[in-house]
Amino acid sequence: MPIKTCQIDCKMKTSKFGTFKRVVIKVGSALLLDKHGEFNNVWLDNLSSEITSLKKSGTEILIVSSGAVAIGCNILKKSKSQMSLNEMQAAAAMGQAQLVMEWQDSFKSKNINVAQILLTRADTENKKRFLNSKDTLSSLLDYDVIPVINENDTVATDELKFGDNDRLAARVAQMAMADLLILLSDVDGLYDSDPKKNKNALHIPTIDKISNEIINMAGKNTSNYGSGGMVTKLQAAKIATQAGCATIISNGTHEKPLSSIIQGGKCSYFSVDSNSILTRKQWLAGYLDVSGSFKIDHGAQRALYEGGSLLPVGLMDVEGDFERGDIIRIMNDDDQEIGRGLTAYSSEEAEKIKGCQSDNIIKKLGYKNKSELIHRDNMALFQSKV
Image 1 (cartoon, rainbow, N blue to C red):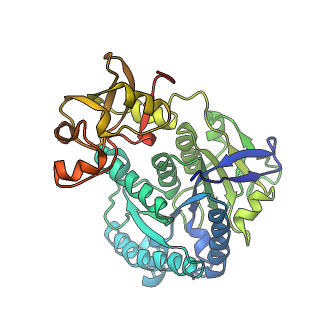
Image 2: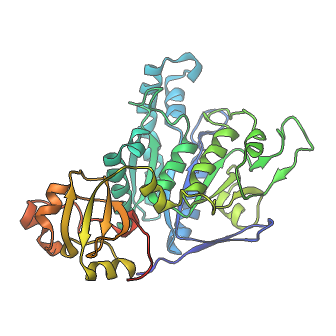
Image 3: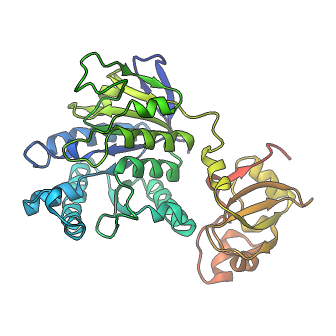
């Protein structure tokens, strides 16, 4: 069934952003906790109601939620500045339990299931872990479950940490091939200077390219609870837009933060970087080494050009020694490279299941990773027709 889309209108240079099928919403710590450090359940219930409405329209939603460390610090009655790394990891473990429970309770009354996913930077950079995480997100969305994602602060070290959940949200948007990333925090977008210091600071509603000049406008201010400031939000927007995902930075302190955006409230919209070579599928092919190849028959080639995935039944030959998650060349029966993609099976596994129907994979291997050798979302084709 085709996914319906939501459309967001803003009173900006461009009144219509277009349609978005898959949206990542990042929620900052300062929105979830009030000035006394207590959890803001009323605000969360309003947001979950808005998200429920989007889901009913057919939009797929993923949530990246900060707050675990801040909640844990509140439970322990200590500030982050008083804690060592190990103590902050302990605080994160305590806070994460409450954080996911709050999200779960808020959506339970709307008959929506949520799932917790904890990621480290290595999960987005290691090929196998990237593919495993991507497949998990895809499966949850297929089951109509909302993933609630946070950094795994309980095990992450300074070397592994994203540094803030803005960039984590951008990596999730990249991984999930989202159309739109919304960064909700306590700021309403980008200004040409710090509006807290300059009352004449100019708000910038639309940004077509994140240049050094734009980056320099950001300053280095952070919020009371969050670990990132405008610089990290711009870094996140750059990651997302280069992966084909538009980005909005908006003030989430409104009673209904998503409605505020839809109704034209002040925010900054970052267009997709159309000139970048790092489009969502080109990113997969461009940053990882090619480890082998699949030679496919004419029928499989036609299926790919019609928007299908690569199935074992169309596989004629396997070359190379590779593992699940590696980038593979897709060759036609004339030995021409027609595309590349992330393989769901190793070379040894692919050899065993070549030419067989997907229903027979378990008989051949004794288990089944996926029905497809390469899913269409994990594939970049170099031609458009046979």
